[in-house]
Image (cartoon, rainbow, N blue to C red):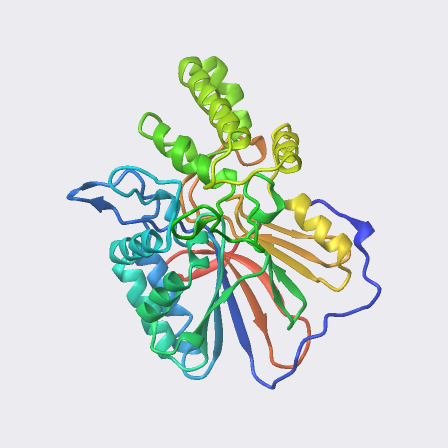
Amino acid sequence: MTQHKDLALPYESWKTDADGKPKIKVVLSDLHLAAGLFWGGERNPHEDFFFDEELSELIEYFSTGKYGGDFDVELILNGDIFDFLNVPYKGDFPEAVTEDLSVWKLKKCLKGHPRVVESLRVFLKHPNKRITYQIGNHDQDFFFHKVRTVFQEALCEDPERVQFIYKKSYYVVDGNVEIHHGHQFEAVHYFNYKIPLLTKGLSEPILNLPWGSLFVMKIVNRLKRERDYLDKVRPVKLYLLYGMFTDPVFTFKYLALTFLYFLKTRFIYDPRRRSSLKTTLRILREELKLWDDGEDYALSRLRSKPDVQAVIMGHTHVPRYMVYGDGRIYVNTGTWTKMINLDLRRFGASLKKPFCLIEYDGLGGRPQISLHEWLGRYAPHQHYVG
C-alpha cells in the first residue's frame, strides 16, 4: 500500500460532534440509471444498470433492523446516479438541453427503475432518514429547479428530506470528510457552477454542459452501436493504443471523429456552447496523461487542506481504499456498472457493487470510514480493499 508521509497532521485525533447516539452515512456513486432495460419493447442499448433488486435491498437494509427506528442514516448519492446523457430523445441526443427536456428524461429514468424508486420512498418514510444528492457530470440536469422538484416529489412529501448540493464538494463536518464526485478536477468535465445555464441569444435557458458531456452524447453514444463496450473500458488512452493493433479501422474512426468534434466545439462559435483558450489548453494537457484513477486529486486536497481527514470520490469507476502514513484516507466508491480494466494492477473485467460507510459511535471520537462490497440480502456486505 502506498504511503505518503508528507501529509502528517498537526494534531492527534479527528474531532466529531458527540450527540450520544450512533449514526451512519452510506455513500454511493456512478450507478448510471438510465431509462430502463427495455425501450419501446426492445432491449435498450443505453442502459448500463442491471442491479435494481440488489440496490433496493441495500437501501432497505440501511433503514430496517438495527438501522431502523430512529437510527440516523444519511444516504449520500455522490453523482452520476442517474444518467441523463444516455437517455435519447426521438432517437438522438440534443446538445441544447432545456428544463422540459431534462424533466422528460428524469421521468423516463424513474419509470425505468420502479423498484429502486419505491425503495427510496420507503427509506424516507422512516424517521431520521435523509438523502443528500451531490451532482455529477452525467446528472447535471438537476441544476434545473423543476427537475429537482419532480425528483423530490417522486420520493416524499417533504422536499427537505432530499438535499441537493450545488457546490463542488460536500463537506461533512462530523469527522472533517470531504466528498467530491470528481469531475471538477478534470477540464474536460469541469462544470461552471457560477453559470450553470446559458441564456444569451437563446429562446429559453439550456444547460451549460462541459465538453466531456457533449462528447459522450454526440460521439460515444453514436459509436456504442458498433462497440457496446466503448464507454466501459479504462483507461481509455490505453484502449486506443491497443486498438491501433487489434481494431485499427474502428480506432482510427474513433480518433478522427473525436478530433473533428473537438475542433468544432472548441473553435466554432455556438450559443449553445462556451469555450476558452485556457480551458482548451488544459484539456489538451490532460489528454497527454495515460492514466489517472483520482488518487492524485485526492492527495492534492489532503495536502492543501490540513483539516480534511478523508476524501471520498467517484467518477473514475475504479474502487479504491487507501490509508496513508498519517492515518488520513482516500476512498473511491467505484461503480455498479460493468467495467473492463486494462491497467495491469486490476486487469480484466470488473463487476462490483461498492459503497462507502462512515460510521459514528456517538461518543465524539473518530468515525470509521470503510469501503464495502454489497453481496445481497442474506450476506449483506464485506470490507473491500482496493
